[in-house]
Image 1 (cartoon, rainbow, N blue to C red):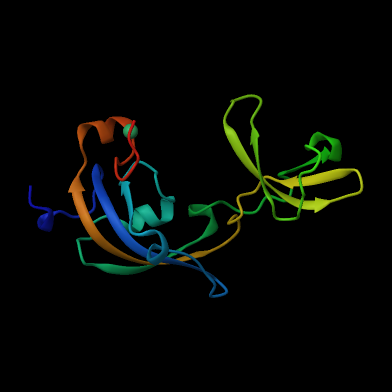
Image 2 (image 1 turned 90 degrees about the vertical axis):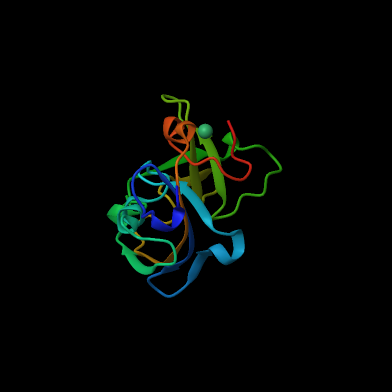
Length: 166
Ligand code: ZN
């Protein structure tokens, strides 16, 4: 197949260059640092608002995409926090507001990430909102590659690229 004639569609593996800017103008992520991002289109590997905007684009095309929180990392939920006793944490670990802490969800066994939002004399408040919850995201995105997905990639629901093999 000739990649030049492909457009972004379900079951294509897409490579993008991008920069991600918050509403206040702060650039928080960019392919200039980590290299282009590669993913399987239609498999929810990237946030829904960005994925939806890419359909039909071809290689070399560039677009500015504004994604509201509902199509990005969700609205901020002020009730999504937990207060843990200070002695639940290992001694000698320096706790700081903003610190990321990995937990395991007791019901599902899935890892979940929380952030320390407050340290009290005997307790620690953990915020389970994603750190980008409530943020409107501005993407400047350019498609730099499109190829048909391999059967394995479609079956797994993600692109196999770089060191991502399983
Ligand atoms: Zn896989």
